Length: 429
Image 1 (cartoon, rainbow, N blue to C red):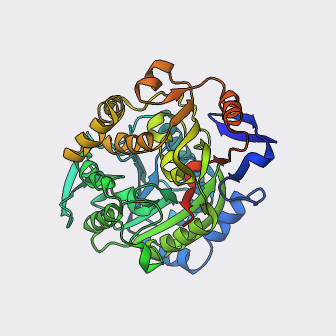
Image 2 (cartoon, rainbow, N blue to C red):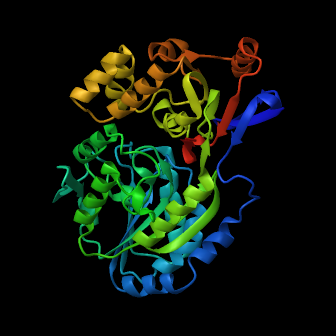
Image 3 (cartoon, rainbow, N blue to C red):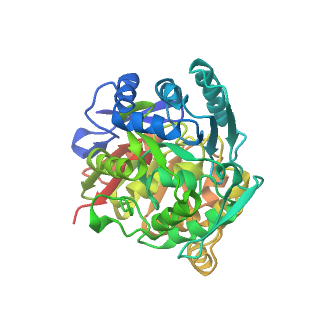
């Protein structure tokens, strides 16, 4: 059978005998074409949006939104939402980059979309800023119970009301990508992100667990709890509304508007229902993050491996289809992500456990997976020598990897996951 898998801005087709395929898993499976405008229109109609209009009337509004590393259809969102912002006296848009670079073409495109939609909605008094974790002007909001110093962008200080635009999906250590992350680390200083992300080394900081989860047994996530404390220190008593979407390849599958906590909890339950699966591990796993921008570089693409690693047995193999046209990642991630990853595996694990540096959780997680498996094959645009130095196995013919698996073991079982950055796989007990 032919299996089409997203890769960069295209598709890779693999031939795999149907008898060898255990699962083919994609986000929001068995659904037809989504109507973005209809779903959004329904989300911004009703009592919650009317309450929001009244709350922001004559007041200063700060809109926090995901940056260009996410595949969010902001053009559609702005078209439906911006009319509701007109009652505000002033709107400040903050693109929440966290520790990502602020000046990127993708963030520039978001800025253009805001300007266009604001003009159409007759919003005249507004500003747009992309957060810079190194160069912004900051204010200190206090410290969390974990000791994380909450140092946040001063541009959020004079807001009377917050509105967070967030695309929710599973997140391999924060539980879910969610509105809280737009505050911490979204508009915080590098030090805040580093201190918070050190909690990623705790096994309890994992996907599907969050303090706002509707299931009381799934709330103990130290890193996510730390982010929530940080958000509350920034926000204080000010109201926070949210428009949450759940998207797949630019198609909005679900959207809700309202107060941040109940809408987030509903989104988590929906993600659990539609984008998580419990399966028996197979000896071979094929993984794609889902194409651009989810495989723009190895640093970003890696989350797909973390979310699906339970689907492969110890000593098994992974074929990772991640184009990575931008290589390993941003220059500032190299020292503690890639350069650490080129050291012996035990040394990687020991050094990070001794002293955490931001971005090193990525090499730590990679090292744990590399040590557990026989091989991770990667089909990408990264030069072979750079791949090999990181204990990975480059391939230019992904079909040949599959064919070799079948030659070695004709009855081998293969699980295929496409769009893995938005999927979580749990191992059947």
